[in-house]
Image (cartoon, rainbow, N blue to C red; front, side):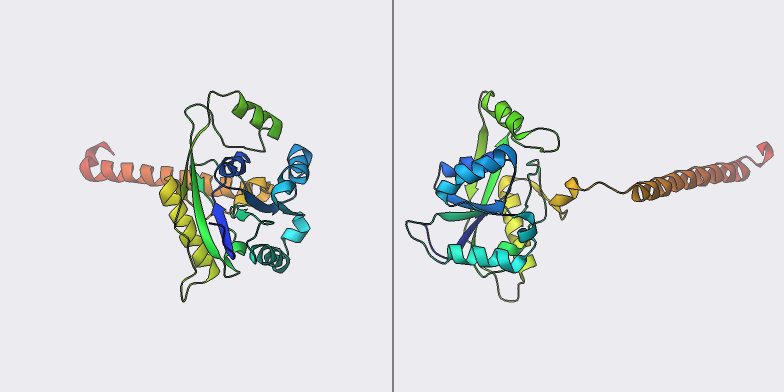
Length: 235
């Protein structure tokens, strides 16, 4: 039942997540405005079911984002659909679930968790936007024999007494991970879009090299110690 002050949250593997959930009930989504084909779909298709899209600069303003969400979920009528949020903020490979952004958990709404688990027996549903365009991703899905997925609608959750929004988000994420049998990690999903600076790479290489040299030195010392103690006449 569509009720006011509810937000549906789900783990995110592909843009197709949104399409799958539309088969169950009409959902409106909130997220960042994209370019290209995805942007066209947001402006012309998803808009018809109440999509809420914002620019990256506006997304950084948490108070503004919270205001948009609160205004939308404040009523449940024929003009609004259930609001769906992907708190990871990016597509993940369906084996892991990365850090949930706390924005949806900050406003006192009832959270309705949804766990999505794909079976890659026919096709890998994960959209890696760094390796494949959206068109190629959709082509692969549409030319496969089938797209198999299990969707679990979990019990609605309220923030507990003494629990902050970060702990609330983590608890909901754990419920989704358990249902979908995926591993939860504390990584920020946006890290995959960042290029590591050369000095950090060089530092890690140096640390690794020193550990190898230290290990070789320790092994050599142990060998000579063994020779001296066990076979003193051979040293």
